Length: 312
Image 1 (cartoon, rainbow, N blue to C red):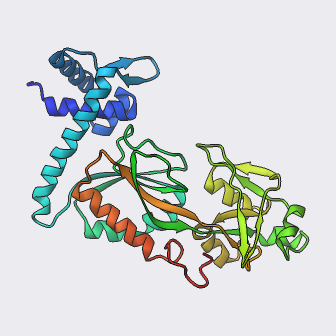
Image 2: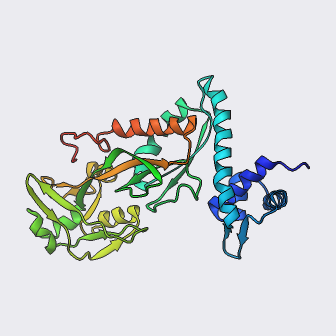
Image 3: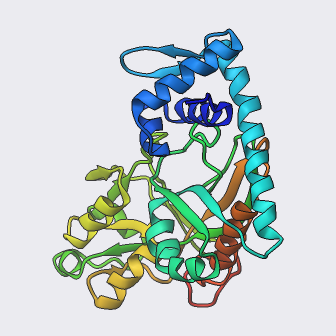
């Protein structure tokens, strides 16, 4: 079989992005032996070693890292060229790799995906959902929704929404606890903390009402680093939780959670759309980014516009 240089380049880039031959083979849906042969052929053609191989991980050599940057750009340009033909027929197609916080995925994006797939039937989405900060370049991610302040200078960043929070507890917990009439009552209650898994920094909520503010700095009775586990702990009656309003909303409506201090507002977390400066946005990525931006802007729980009664 003739050596396919472009396919070898795709294989090499995927290995760099996922860190293993096995992962690249699974992502590209080819045999691991095929991947190995492609890399051997590419290294032989170039006359340099592109990858360091250990028992635990594969990483690019100095030459390999430089080659990756150029090869990734070439492949992205080729994909854009292919997409431009489809675009001329008003059809965007191909795969979009996107990352987002779990709450954004489960409460906003995934429930609305039928509308996106109906609008763009030729686009396949590869969605990652987690609280970790993903390296978009190294992992081959096209774009991401990211919560909090974005400090990475290598990323184009545009705020598109915000994650609103509220203090909640189960009716069972509140029934057996002293009344919470003001923020100063909180230190007398069980407060459950949330720790961001990547930074290990604990969420420190601040309540606002007019010119008054109160920061919850008490020692948590328990800590969690997973959003689903955290809200489940609140539902189980273990204490008071500070959770995204979008995640709490169905439980509040069902009476499984009760909002604590509803006259006070918690600070919101900005949600930004980010993508690498070096990554030229293809038609398919632009289509998803525009759809996701509009989706967030039109939802009262996520929009940057203040909505009366939305708990901004």
